[in-house]
Length: 232
Image (cartoon, rainbow, N blue to C red; front, side):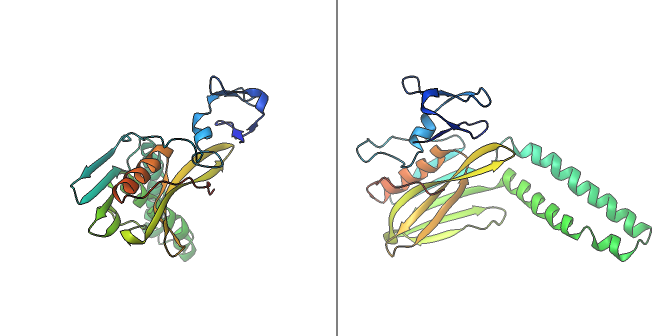
């Protein structure tokens, strides 16, 4: 099972991994880090012989079981959004000043058309920042349906599936590298009885968030958990 440095993404040779302490050292950047997450998130989610690990309620999550209905809800907010907020204010502020000058001086048409792509980026970024502050994802399972809704601000990814059509839930991992920084994001994917797959929730920053959703829905629908290969 390959182990990667959490700082620089370099593959760690077996000689630099201590299984007893679950620690590894990267000779490239001298980082020392724990490997338990990567052991759990390796080529398979779980060994078929290994017991299923109970996942505790993650922060910012709430769960309600009303007998015939399960509801899982979590906020999108993270402290990182404050950095995006300041960047958004700078980006949008620059465009406001640009267009104020362009229209007050009756500037050429090109001066007004040139920043349109930047305006589109600014609008998308502003909407994302606002959604991160106020939105929640609500997963409701009951009355024969599994419904995923994001709001109150509109956002793509709402789902409405028949519970009987869900054969299994999997957690899949996506890896993104940006300037040497490696980050993992996790999706909860429903395997349907017709062989298709539908992503219920995407881009969760922590594996336990995705595993908790998988655990609660499978338990509620009485689906026996099965190990599945990771899909990057």
